[in-house]
Image (tube, rainbow, N blue to C red; front, side, top):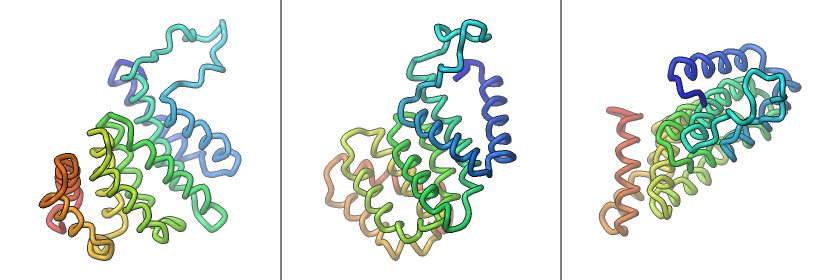
Length: 212
């Protein structure tokens, strides 16, 4: 959450590399995932380790919306590294939980966070039982994209929709009638639905390029 871009980028990259190198054990996952979930849910830092002798006192920890979004963005990057360690049937529940965390994080009203979530999601779409859940995931994202009450919700769902299709393969567009549903929303939906559909078309075009 540091206000300096260079410091924040260095810390984010260090956490990503640390998780990628040492985050594969059950013990590490058991420690990391609950912390990541807490930050994604609240945007707040864990201040329990800050004592009177710490270099940074609890009073100096930034707590504004911008800092919260920066924390979430950093955690999403780290979560992507952690998820790469999740292999085998014994980790299917953790994979499902990780994807659910990311889908919830799409509601964050920050395009930087939503973009980071989308990049992470696309890498997980063929892991574990995710393809068995794909229909439900796309249905949920489509509902939020076309009927979400807030613009940020519709935009975030559009990011998620594009990531799910990108990670699952172009065939998922036809199989789950994604294009038809977006076309219907553009032609006969309410204003919010048309806006959400256009968000999805924009991001699908950006992510899939000439394939879309």
